[in-house]
Image (tube, rainbow, N blue to C red):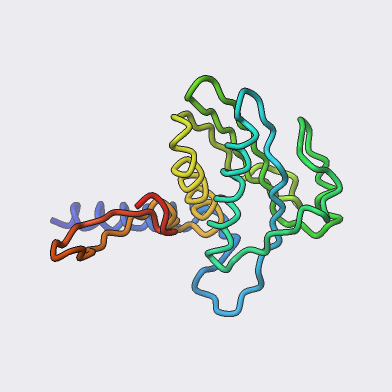
Length: 190
């Protein structure tokens, strides 16, 4: 019995020590009231393929709306950007000069009815990527792709999962019949 207690105590201590040093850096404390908004630059996404410009603009708008919804970010106006979009290498000094703390780089490729989105979030001051993902799907799924990436951003910055893939169910009575509807958290895709 003493051996069991010693092993249990030893394993508990090791688990505690490992769990305290293995957490991710928290950029935003969602439990801290009155926190300043983090300036984030979201320049135009790079586009390739037929119809990519329209899809990229739609995805850019959804991402901005998602991040604005949180109240944690200040989306910097595009007219302040020293670069309209990011081609290859990122000059972090230019983004730091306009006051950006975070930067999103995106690339959209279309082929037939499919879309490939490569999205990355960078810490401008440290000059390093925080989270980067590549998504594939049908063009009709571009809102879902962006919501999924916005959730990744929130997880990387707060340590908590985002809410952007949340679905809302509601009942609507029309002409005496009640019907159940499902929509995205932002009111789209009813």
